[in-house]
Length: 236
Image (tube, rainbow, N blue to C red; front, side):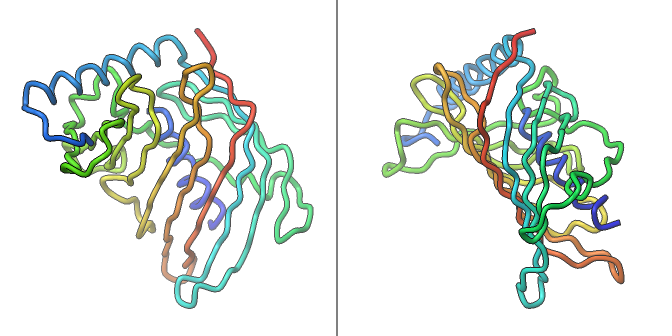
């Protein structure tokens, strides 16, 4: 039960991968910027609908009561993603508490789940309202921050912010959570940082933190961090 719950929630975090303005903008200017970002992401996903990367995922499980570390897993993974689909993950090696373990110990079991609604997908405007974040006169003029506000509170909706480079509209960072939590999940936070390869955004690091509580079954705070390498964007 524990591996199933944690694994299913990590998949949510991976799926989310596929999906501020220094001075206040007028409504027309803000709308134009949001339209440009939306079109830029749409064009990018059409040009590169799939990705491949290797990554090292470190997952630490804590007792929420005393914050005592209970377990540390380190998995080397190969990951294939396609826009709008669940990622395919192959575990290449696994260690648990610094001891070599069977790769199955770092895989868990996969649960059927409907895909998350993509913020910048073809139907994104049906599920989200986007707004520019105004950081005031001291904000960073080199970036745009976009807040995604779900129109419904469900497990399939994302709630959070995206940061884009103002000059190129390249995605720099996204962070947020789900609009509603499934049973057993008490907290969920996600942060992704992006790098650029040939001017295109690729995932560099991820961090997911969640608290899972099911009476008499599991009570854990889980922190998963990954560092990616060999990232490739794949054309159709």
